[in-house]
Each structure stands twice: as C-alpha cells, then as structure tokens.
Length: 125
Ligand SMILES: [Zn+2]
Image (cartoon, rainbow, N blue to C red; front, side, top):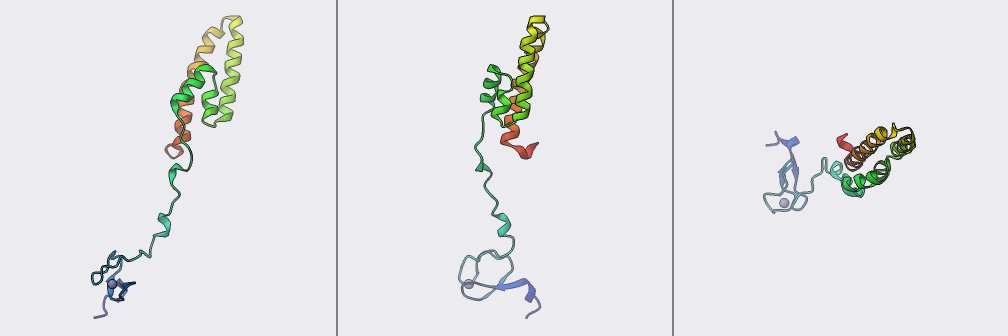
C-alpha cells in the first residue's frame, strides 16, 4: 500500500482513491473534473469569422478585375489587378490590350477565388 501514491488522486465527491486520469469514480460514479490540460482545450471556435464564397469572388472579378481579391480583403492585390485591368483596357487602343486584358481578367478571377480560400482557411496556406 502506498507504493503508487503518486499515481492516485481522490474522488472529488466521495474522497475514495482514484487513478490519475480516471474520468468516473468507480465507487460513487461521480464524473471527475479533469485537472490537467483542460484549460488549453478552450480554444476559440474557428467559425468566429464569416466565411466568404469563391463563386462570388469569381463573379466580382468577372465584372471588374481586382474586385475578387478585394472581396477576400486582399486590398493591395485587388488594387494591383484593378490598375492592371485599367491599363490593359486603355491599351486596347494600341491593340495589345486585346491580348493583355483577357490575361488580367482571367488571372483576376482565378486569383480572387484563391484569395477567398486563403481568407476562409488561412491555416492551410
Ligand atoms: Zn466517488
């Protein structure tokens, strides 16, 4: 008796000896409050921030390059795409815009959808 003293605790209800980590008292059945490590489990729920839709980002980027990124709160990238779209549209006067604009336009839609994924699941990137 007593050789396992460090491995035992007592029931918070009836005081009978328990193995450390026992969830229920074998004598009275009382649910023991876990004392170790329970605090670290109180993490904030991951859904504290509203999720956004990649489809909406694509639709916005379809209308205006950069809007998809802005929708995902990537303001700087969105502004770059917006300016690139304006420059590409303006360069249509020199024909090169007909090549440039579709590139900016498609990249804006693809990038906008990815930006939303980064926004929704930042831990994956
Ligand atoms: Zn007990």
